[in-house]
Length: 144
Image (cartoon, rainbow, N blue to C red; front, side, top):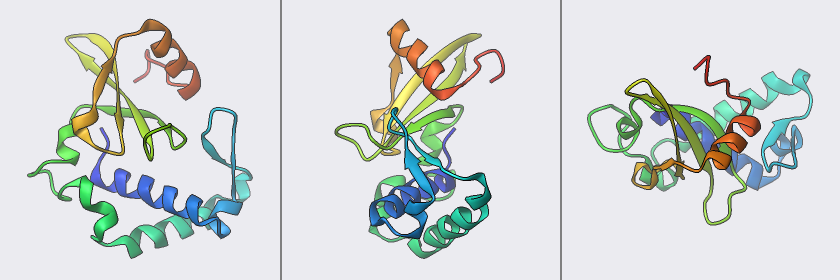
């Protein structure tokens, strides 16, 4: 499940990468398009910059599509029961895409949604896409 706080953090991460400042310098983009921390020793410094960006975002228009921060409205609560397992901010046509795992009637199901918008969530039914997702994310379906 992707919470409001997680969505806010993902958006802050995207903004900091786009700004190409100090935060950006701590990361490198791999072949898969994912941004990864280059040096584990920089983790605390990068986290501090990310936390500051999240705090500065408040409730401005950047967060408009996320819905309310509580579970009583649309937005974050629409992802109830979904476990975010992979994230990519280099997807064509979207700011970012998040992939999810959800157990449905004892079966493992996989979904994807763009830009934290639950209206865009779709089940992945193509077995090769699921296989690629599991490989790229490192997700172990036997240990959800």
